[in-house]
Length: 174
Image (cartoon, rainbow, N blue to C red):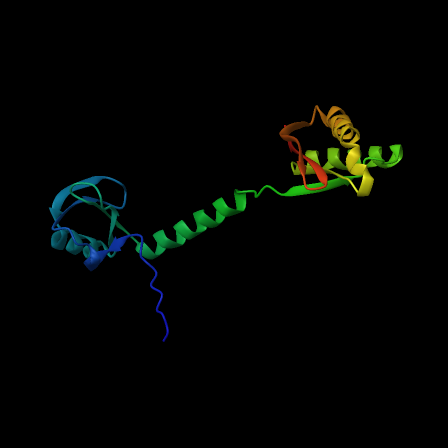
């Protein structure tokens, strides 16, 4: 058995408007007045446009005379633009070991600075293997050193915490 999926319309248009009386607004945005739906539909058809219920919860409901197809197109266009402008926050990970070489540490700190300039969040991880778990203080010192190096560009979103056998700190750009 197949389930049917119905898409619900946001706005009631023309004959789908259920109210007896509506407040009518013309295409230029001027209020025409309160009138029966039949009269408002007749007025919209004379102009060659649709009657669209834009404020169904108002008393009486507000209907606007407009080209509904053009209105839907513009709505979709605005939604697409809004989605485009909305930047999803990506998180980059930079992993260290407690016994990291000085040169490698400096290189990874440079990478963190580049990610911050590109406005990424950074998840800084210190991984402990085997007996290294006994040197948690070394890992905490390492994270503090990273924070001191990038302190002007970053702010701590989550201070260092343990997650299994790794110490994690999350930084975000200022």
